Length: 257
Image (cartoon, rainbow, N blue to C red; front, side, top):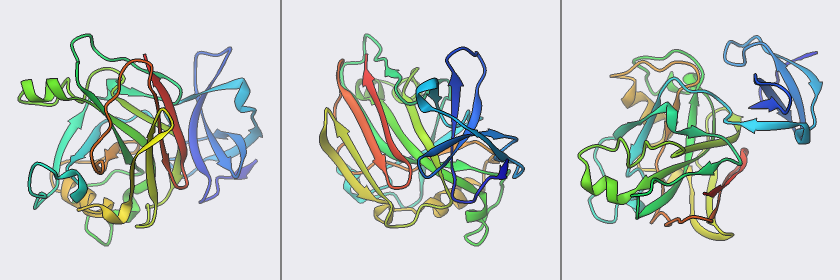
């Protein structure tokens, strides 16, 4: 066994014959079982695994999900850019992992897939400052904020527009550390590029988002923070293939049922 390296990526898997799950660590292309708690700082890597023998799950089971609305100038097409982070919650029941299907409610007639970089919180955190915020970030992963626009227009809140079951895909793994300004995100639908951006184009940086939100709420290890989507998100329908790539994380792929 070896101690978990600082640059190892983290994920979760389930063996085909088991009902439980375990964390795994990527070291380059090799995948190893992980023993211990990666958020507790005491994890060690075990035997190497074959990805063909396991099922990738969402890389973390969050206690809560916070999300930023309109955090790119390119997305602020119908309103002025916000002067402070505009945040909302997504229910944890909406989380799914790589390779799963996004299921659209029967009465959702205008649905878009917002490709996003998602922060993963690494420790209990409250009243963070610009100097301490980086210490609270375990890493980041790919995500889609699936959004039913007809629900969004009809309701006062986002509870079903952005919180319906399967509307928060994440994965496939967690890249460690704070995403730098050059980290790139690309969204593709059926192989066609629909969104491209970098972290540096955000209105509020990941650290600024976390500092602001931690004034009011306490973050716990494993919590997620969706950091916003760029440009005009693509519409999706049944049968579409969805993919979002982020530097250091890889590709999150799935289909629409």
